[in-house]
Image (cartoon, rainbow, N blue to C red; front, top):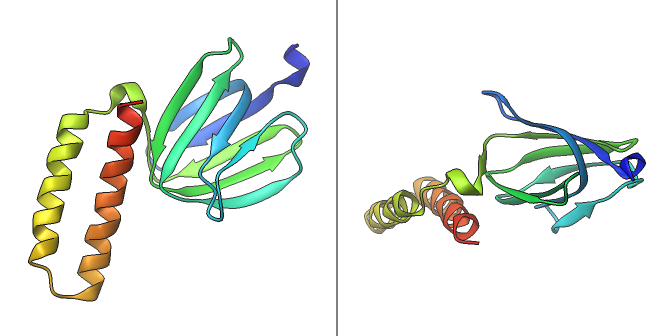
Length: 135
């Protein structure tokens, strides 16, 4: 069955997060979430805040929280470049919840539209981390 595996690389500006083979990878596409399986059509897509879910060659699932980035699928090779990718087991949900509370407090006292949008985005990133950590 190894002939039906994808080659997957997940890279951030800091390091290579994942490099290996998998059966599938589910991604938070900019238009909608989608899954890549063996012989997927070539695609380049922007990624949003969400989860990257990998089904490894041993059928175990690994989930990463991401802030968004880009993916390219070509000839059963999936290349993902993201700002961050944090494995679900490594996320401290208590710290993320504390960050949400702090960001919400900042949001209450912010008057500029640009700062409000930045804080709302930061809150959505932390909420995503909590959601993924508690699955």
